[in-house]
Amino acid sequence: MKYMGSKNRHAKYIIPIVTRNRKSHQWYVEPFVGGFNLIDKITGNRLANDSNEYLIALFRAIQAGWTPPDFVSEQEYSDIKNNNADYPNYLVGFVGFGCYYAGKWFGGYAKGVETKGKDRNYTLESKKNILKQYNGIQGICIENKSYLDIVIPTNSIIYCDPPYLNTTNYKDKFDHTIFWEWVRQQTYSGHRVFVSEYTAPQDFVCVWEKEVNNTL
Image (cartoon, rainbow, N blue to C red; front, side, top):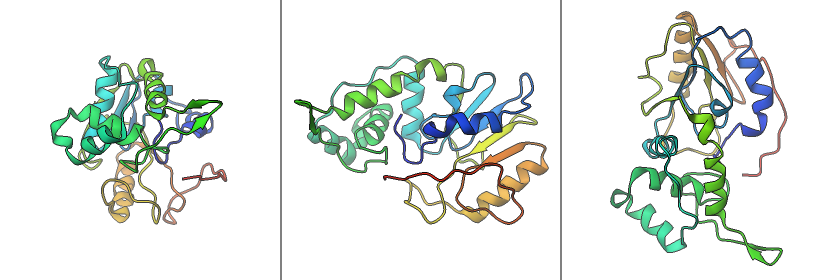
């Protein structure tokens, strides 16, 4: 699924690093799973968590076999945005992320632009993209909590893709000082922890980096 900050295009680099020497039955955990764009390419015991209730409701629905709509009008988009309590959380999640160009939460309605004589249908594109993930998300334990509250199985591999410092804000504010201390505590507890960020405290080691273009 299109999602702000998605690592889908970097999955082929990241996954071999974080899963290297992974043991049989060892859990792979993503506390900030976002668009499920890495975890859907990994097998075995997996725990996906995100604090956005609408995002989690959406992926739980997809996991259970729900099919999103082919088209959402601009009027429907506005009504769902302004009256989300009147709609199922999974539909709010799909519209909130899927009807904008780059997957930012209700970042604006993506109007179809004519290409090759046809109007581009962003809703249908989002539907097709997320349904491609159906097989990959089967068997994942999906939770909707603060990352501080999830119970992580012993000796897990944890991959964190939190909101980046000094970049576009997500739905909720994020305290990076508390986050980095939490990461330290996880390593002290015996987990292997990897974090995607532009910068990190000095006691962390860079294991991979790549210069990328950001068109958001």
